[in-house]
Image 1 (tube, rainbow, N blue to C red):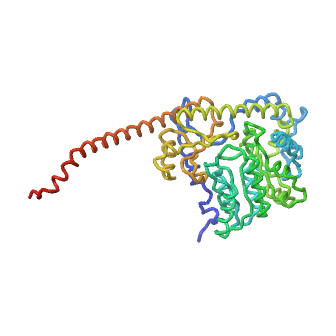
Image 2: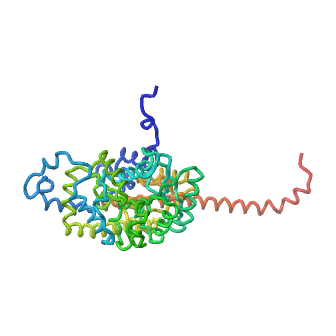
Length: 471
């Protein structure tokens, strides 16, 4: 008799993905500039460490917050006692204000439509529980964040059907790709409940343009399905005018407030990337559907945001001078660091997809593959991990349909560490180039020798053919 549940025994969590395998090797041999200079540099972690000094400076100027005091008086007891799962109204008010600020106040958010959860992982899973039954499907454009195989599928039983996007148009969503994915789901006898996108995109580092968003909206209206827009990187956009939220896109279509589409538009947000606070576990769901909000709020009791976290962030976000400074400076630093990586890779003959957001670059290493196959990509990925000492995410882990693309993170390390990483990849590319040149030279010499021999052999051939064999 089996003593454990099927859920505990199954391996559908996705932990065996090549995305996580690199992490395991990094943990065995992490890089340190002094203690382990030959260790593996972690470039697979999308974490924003570039603006910690701004947050720490604010905390130093506001010691009462860390001391759990309000106007000099302790609020420890107030925070330590039971809090219901609706979240602190003051925090929700400040959070929707911050979200609107990141979007240039082109969108207004109602705190009553917001559900607080412990990070975007919980937010996405809760939405799947609310929107789909086990065995129903969501369409996701490729490449997509590898963790979605865990977040969306593992406990919910929801299936993912890929919308295959191509490098030929910079991986933009097309009408044909949407229809192909929908038809593929039907062939698999899967009922499609919606489309989930990350905007800005993980792993592309790009924002969706209005044509893509309108295509998505039209598709949702025609098929009568949901749209989930994961916008956890909205504050990382270097060019703030280029980001359009799904809420703004639908609003600009002048779709009547009573149209049923509004109840099928859902947004996910988090403070993990924009404020660099993944350890605080602050995520949220925003939906116009009252039933979804009510159900997700009840589910949030399994993963609440702690009272002291809400208290601290309420105070931080209410300081409008600080949030304005942080948003502007953080964008500048991200853009500068991204340009440093792109420039360094370009010097090694490696190009990146043109991006305008996020904490990583989508890197084109197709020319370094030994063949145009995912097996060759796996081989290259292992060499970069074990020989070069860099943990980067192979495109196959993101379900990219073309081998040779990789995601490289740049904001989770110091500038000096990034320089080491760039030097390592340059040396690696040079060694590959040199090896190929030597191989080509040897082939050229061999071919030359063959041609030289053939000059003597060919004239003799007719004579030999007319002579009797020498027994």
